[in-house]
Length: 402
Image (cartoon, rainbow, N blue to C red; front, side, top):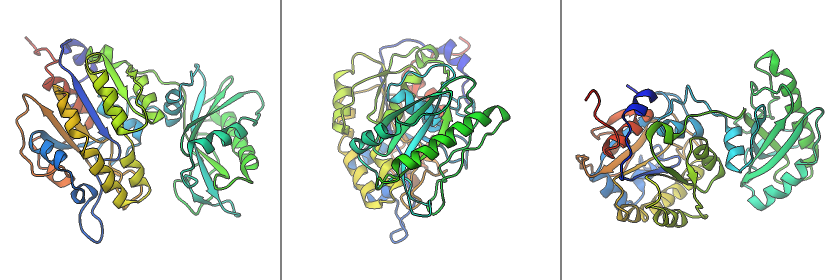
């Protein structure tokens, strides 16, 4: 049973206890065909294994059982927001994440630079993961595109990703994506989901047509794909809901955007996990809730690189002692969703979850892995329940009915 926001507002209390929510993007995988072991089961992670032994553990469903989540809904769920009620499109997350000030009525879309062949079929949805520097040059080219009756803004996000914002009267975000999500097919035309969205769909398709001309001589990024059309969302802040003073430490823009939308202060995170841990240490006395995000595990899974994902987990493991040295009252290590290397995509499988706290009775599990954590005392539960557990173990909820 999910705790309603009204109850959180009533019971939440301000205390000096500190919380670290450490989110390993794409955490968890599926067995490798030749070994029968997942990436977590393959990796040497003595510190995470020790954490599992000293924590209460389980696995979470980010949205609902069987539903494969995007990163936005999955993170919102960890923050306690029902992703079915508070659906935030990727375009809006990307725009806010790069610091673009969305105005009411704006429509933003996530852009992937992609590669298409001579027949217009997508051969690489990420254009070989071009560099951010190359991205900026291509964005400058896309800024030449002009559409009738609207302004367009194009901004670099990171790597192969960018964001386009449409500004004008009576725009709609009720649109389908142009990204086919698979290779071997041409980009899809953007379609209106309602009659009121017809004009916006036409503008999006005209932008795509002009982009194809602008980029036709570029390689490998000779096309763009658009998805996640969204207007600016409105969410209650975590300060309002939980009486927290929250901060976010994330390198990738989209996750910074998501954190900003729920009222977290964005801290300078540098470029590496070591930089992020350093930022956490430097700011530890200033805030009582920290969202720390790691992206590399998800990237390796999406690339289908099993060995690299194993290596990423082994690197993350080396930083766990630094988190524990800060002595947070609650440390949660979990993921937003699984990204198994064998699928190269997000998946619907439940996500590993470990909560370390002074008053947690340890499950004494033998390893930090999908199968082992599923044996923990928390069992399988909705990710939306995580904030209730976190607040309770941090002693930030008053007695109910007292």
